Image 1: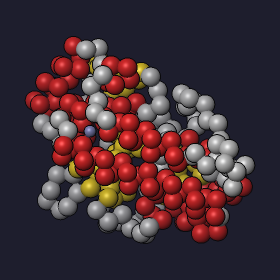
Image 2: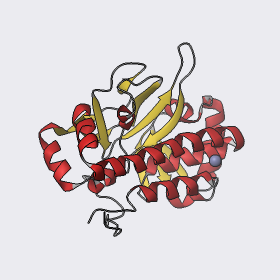
Image 3: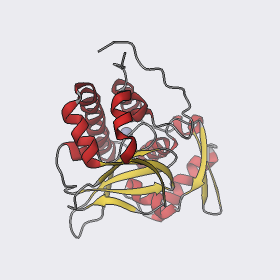
Length: 244
Ligand SMILES: [Zn+2]
């Protein structure tokens, strides 16, 4: 494999998923018959709670939260997946979703791929297998870092981290996001989220109007903990060994 990295434009165009752009072109060509654009509504469950993962999703403008839950417990968000990621990649490790479930946080577009096609190419293409190994390592890092952040960092740090993950590769974004959904991302009640949003508003990191939220990368970076740097470094390694 060439050590030269694939150059991906930043910020990403709305029709590009960076992980898919790093996949071997011959593999993507063979996926074409089972790789389809879809529109995902906020709140929709894509897979979860023990059911088989039949499709995986390369998000474009949609953002997907991966949650873990046990029966009777509140779900805990463990990862947020956007245009650099793939939802459902753990199908490479296990055919069913176990305690993992994926829910659309921000409605938008994605490319949906038949899970069987991902598994088949993963078994036959060493280049794709290497890429997916690096991606799964990055996913595990995000899950572990989220747990660390929840345990050792303050709620304002955790909220700022989640909001930066929602922004993805953009500088500033605006979208519909109910405050109850924000609370779910960090496992906090609405009253506590309101107080924290007040702090972020005062510093021009967020702007709220009529059920919509506008996020400023520059503003949020003033509040986030060092977990953000860890996640960015892990993400950079995924496509670092590019195809040639
Ligand atoms: Zn943190």
